[in-house]
Image (tube, rainbow, N blue to C red; front, side):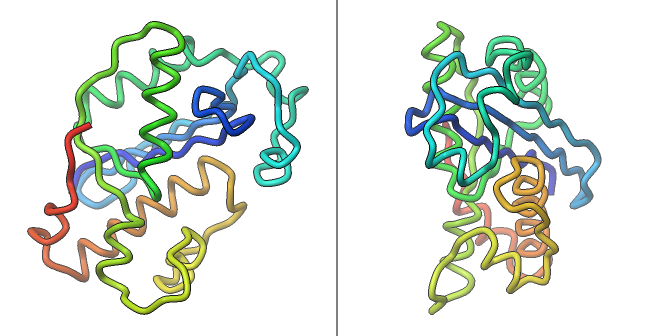
Length: 177
């Protein structure tokens, strides 16, 4: 399979407040490239979000803004039409809202949510959080809620699922965004 795995962390509850992003490129079920950056969200940080990911306002003062980062991410989208995330609803909404905020056109891309594939393939779990699925699949998730660590784990989840299960079944989870 060829795809990119993405993960965003946000400064607050607003979806247009991305403060970090990671993109992991997978070619033929192998991770071939990684991109990570802090983002200056140009907005306030919420204590709760900082508790989750550990990124503080002072960490991003000199970081690029979303439009500056987008030029790098957009190239990944153009080369890799399938974009995956664990809880893709969140990450896709961060992309959409951030692009809207800055008046940037949203590209069309295909999306797959490993949260949904995990619920389908691994029935009767207590939860389907990224760290839970990583543990079940023996994926070493270091530094959970770091965008790069989370996107690597997400990529490895789909690689594992594509090795274990029918690819046609996995493709049923692909949606146009």
